Length: 216
Image 1 (tube, rainbow, N blue to C red):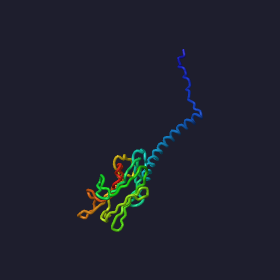
Image 2 (spheres, one colour):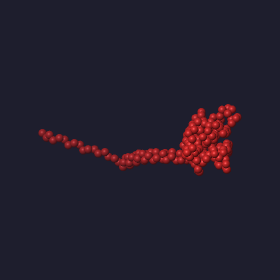
Image 3 (tube, rainbow, N blue to C red):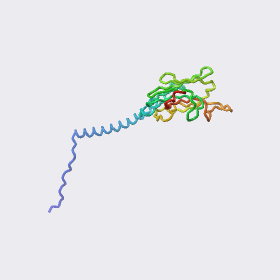
Image 4 (cartoon, rainbow, N blue to C red):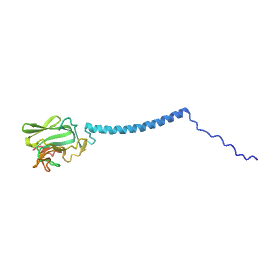
């Protein structure tokens, strides 16, 4: 009796026609393109965020909160801001003396300002033996102050710039825009910023009480 094992059947090879192969290649190419585009989008989003910061654009995500961004400086000591205030009554306040590293200072002038978007600017000019300080809202001067020549000795200043990137704030408390403290010479002739309150500029916005604007 012949005990030779039976010959196994021939293997069946999977046959792929041309149409299926083209579809498979197209699918792979699509996934590769999606992956590449996602990588490119991530890079572009980072670049757009950086460009927005450089452009100093005001961003208002929550209209119930204030927003502020400092304009890109176009000249030395360029102090301009774009501000959004939620509906309500506010006042813009200016101080030129007794300015500390935090907190407020005695008001040299104040003016009412309403809600909405505003362009604010601050400028100080030396005229002979005096200094003139002018604060403008939407291109119109609204606050002025005059100081003696020893108010600013042109020895430099220490300031804080916290609005180079657009941010939002609840208006339950004052919103400082500019805090600058002028340097002085001590008894040894060294130039430094005083430890306590001193001359300088403090500009801020605060909510207005019903009768707060009747007397400066």
